[in-house]
Length: 345
Image 1 (cartoon, one colour):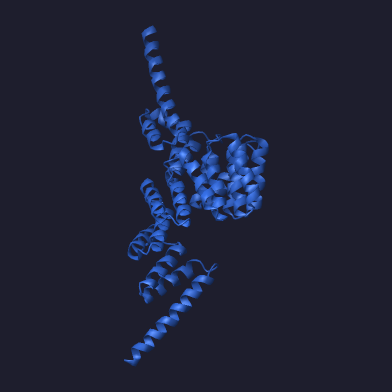
Image 2 (cartoon, helix red, strand yellow):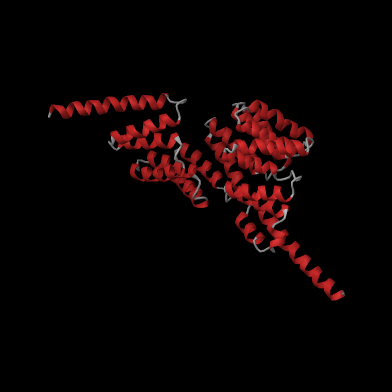
């Protein structure tokens, strides 16, 4: 019996050591390593709520939202009353624009526990996705009221203030989050986006680099760094950052779109066009992609193709259409003049 207990104790210690290593890697944002370690777990341990939560978090941090959703929904299936982790699931659903799924999740958490900060973060994300920032802020503040040291709620509240262009309150929220956890890279990122919108590119770069020092494998952070460095006129550095962003996550269309924009600014039209065509295949309903393709084709003298892409951009985004309409009118006039010149010969 003593020998059996010794073997069992050794197995338990080995299991705990593996879980500890994986969790340490996740805390250091070494997410691929964390996933590799978690994959070494026995199937019975891998299919537990806590492990599935960490798997989901790893995929989320790597920008793999579909995989993150699958793992976090498995967590919820294994432990229906569990709320921790659902705030990340709600953010994943926000990024995926899955409004019906997020509404259903909101109903579930409200039935489970209205006294949990996780619940109110889910509710806040639901209203955020529905473009109701004021209501979202109200629920994020409720999460903070329930648990003042829940730094993620402060950051989510900051994001909504940014959406409302209330930058002073947004910065206060991000700084509150950082007072609670200096390694909360999301808040450094949030401050960077504010300085970016204010065209304070050096300050934006500083804050994005602070975020990257914590989470160096983030494709999103590399992308934003490239954007602000490019805005400051350092095109070669910007292109390197955007190349790194694409290498970290080849499925990040924003990185490739920004890389195409940078190539265009550097006068590399054909390379920019090839990059945008790849982005279009990945995100076929993004008006901005068709608009930029149209601009490049126009500069290359391919006016009919440019007009076709501008028209698609207008169809996809009929609300913010003034600039697109101006480009279409100019092109139609130019094509008409070309046709008239052709008739003279």
